[in-house]
Amino acid sequence: MLGVLLVGPGCPLDIQVREEPDAGCSGDSCTLACAADRECPAGQRCNDFYDECEPGPRITEPCADNIACSGIASCKDGRCARRCSVNDCPLGYQCSPGPESLCVETCEGLTPENLGRFCASSMECTRCGLCTDSGGGKKCHQPCRSDAECPDARPGVCVVIPGSTLRVCQQ
Image (cartoon, rainbow, N blue to C red):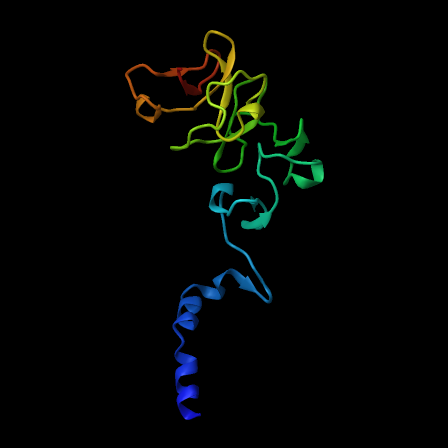
């Protein structure tokens, strides 16, 4: 019996949990701290007020109604949408060019899910795509800051969207 008491408090799991204060747990529930949606597991978003992950759709993800979307986002055409002007999107998002002006997730190495498809709005491009016309009609494009961020990285492939300061990879 004495051996069990000596081994019990030295459990490695106990040490791992104590390395991170409270390990994100409070009572019976555990939450993860976050600054941006992409820091949360799939099916969760970052609560802007509490800076912790919570269940629910992120901006551009499918929704059933306005209550499902976070903060000032609303359910527009079946997706959580947030209107914006230049720099007022949450961390990890950027404002699409006007007149649309919707928050769209920044790519930072991710390829838009609907890259190259015809679109009427950036919401149709889903994650990290901008719906713009660079000749041949409006299509989903990948945002970029330099040619190196585009799939083929050739010189001149990252172009400025007319009437905007944003840039996209030319297809």
